[in-house]
Image (cartoon, rainbow, N blue to C red; front, side):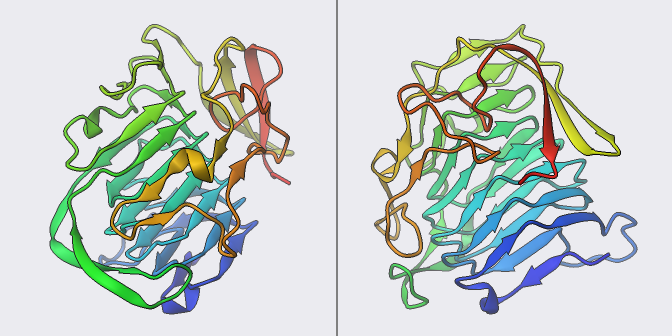
Length: 293
């Protein structure tokens, strides 16, 4: 099967509701552009409600991901690379309510990202890219405002769940400021050093696994209802991406308000549950994660 590949034609586009699997798994040839979804210049683009598994790489956003939103996607069993590769972008881009379950959840060669209400079960790998100057733009256009290299950082992580070996330890020495708030770290995942109110439970066994039957795919996980996020996440919460000097807003300029979860269910406006699922009770969960309406 073929993945989804786009160039500048992907600007102001959407990729939603797809099941993408068995992409470049035999590794018969080499080269770039192999992934479940590979996009250049995803300006004001929506990637939503896709199920991506058994690919060499899940989602690959390669430069100029400005105004992009990656939301409500399920990714697992992707490798040898990663679920999400953000390559030489200055932001702002939003990654929210996703389930990242492969060995490497995110390969971050970018800056200016917001990661909100995700479940990360694999490593988060960070790398500055000082030898590749890449463009940033005026809001909601392809007009180039300037070109800069990637020093790394300028990310915000809010209300996520990390399960070992994931975590934010890679950002402790980031060049640009990073902030984390309302996150939960389980089973040995590494908390961000600058985060004071995190829930850290190194001995907690989430029992995380994905199963499949004739009805679809199910996620099993142990959760504690006592965990609470840092409040409803909005455009105001996220601030501005430093290099373009732009806020995290929708393509039409309206502010974000992350008030629904992976399933589209309403979040508790006072104390939303961390991670992609707004659970009503703690304990062992068996969640029907695909198909995801």
